Image (cartoon, rainbow, N blue to C red; front, top):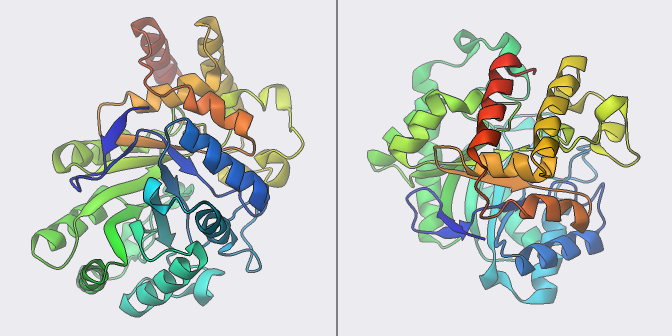
Length: 347
């Protein structure tokens, strides 16, 4: 397991991050603990969570339960200094904190609640789960309209105020670094400019969806990542399981994400499954597990990136963890690019 720097922070983390969003719905506390233990044994030291987790589904009754599971592992193991923990404050919505936006007061309130659930004094990377103004993520790209967002001055004023609060929280030792999620190139550039002006910590990372089947990041954000040293934390690198091949032929395995969410967050359509099978075929022809190939491909992208893996069993994690240190051969990369041109992004 290689190490990669998180942004320009100097903080080195494992090249693969363990996602936790199923813990509390699809996974029990004991299963979550087992996943952490196994991932650490294989060299992973980076965990990602959020105040709104678990998902599948997100409910008011389960909000925060994933952080609680991580917190009980920390209390039981005493291994806080061996892990880097990332969490998130949710943006405006219907379930978390009654839909309140991200602002100085809510940052403090949400952070204190997360720290309590996690049973820790600090969070290594504190991320804004999605921007107040909205974004094109979560399949909103089909109808995205930036002209409906608040005025620029209002957006910038809120950003500056939030950064000032984060600066205070860093000084208090409650967070170490700052990251974004489901952001755009324009938004990230504003956060960077405000940090440069002295308002608060510099953006270290941006957690956006990225996989063989979802490549919105490849242009403007990839360029920003390269020149500004902002690390992409790639979520759903297996396209919510499609790239594993488990949904081939219309299969819906019991307990799978598709069995709980048939639309897969707007990704489920016949063309998507057909495209996934093309990539699965490339992997199998090369003698690779499709999961391992998909994660290795993300690891090899030409911009700063760390894939966030997840699964409902330790065995599922192993296929992703096998990608650590792997470099895909040129013929496989050529086949992947050929498939991408023939079958562009399906959702």
